[in-house]
Image (cartoon, rainbow, N blue to C red; front, side, top):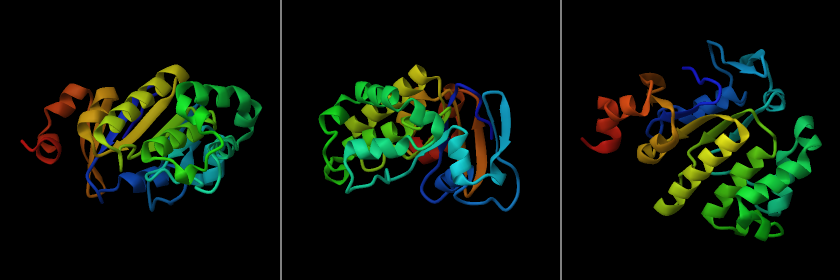
Amino acid sequence: MEVRAGETVALLGTNGNGKSTLMKCIMGMLRPQSGRIVATIEGETHDLTHLTTEEIVDRGVALVPEGRRLFPKLTVEENLFLGAFRSTARAALQRNLDYCYEIFPRLRERRSQLAGSMSGGEQQMLALARALMSAPKILLIDEPSVGLAPVLVQRTIDKIREMKEQNQLTVLMAEQNFTQAIRIADCGYVIVHGKIAFDGKSPEELNNNELIRKFYLGL
């Protein structure tokens, strides 16, 4: 599969088909048995299969994990500071923090609140903002709609589009909610039992695919 610079690509698949496993392989959290994962960032090409997770993050790749994975006993602001781990991000910490508070005003209001005491929607905002604090070039987002009410899913997807456009990000988003994912995706892939079963070059191709109709639209 290919994710071109500046695109939002949807990785579609039901539970257990390999979306999160692929994300973890890209981040160096799991090692693939074969093949390569190559990222070109600011003109330099990196084979991510030979790098540690820390090295991958340091090159500008960030993950918003499924289930958010916040530090529940730390405050909102402490969680955000932890996102600014790499040296490039530390140099722009205040600017990125101000931006996160601008795009997610609720986080500014709750900056002294423990992350674990926030609602699911607020925690998802924090998880997205924490990833932004690393000043990424490539953003991986794993199942952002999980555990959220429909209205919050729509708002979350809209915020992902806003973040992507304002920060010139390249986004790979794993998602089960086809209807919401396709609103912001430039193209997408369907993964079935660990294999790419369909490569949709446009939202229209995805809408008209038989796999999509069967698994997501009930047609």
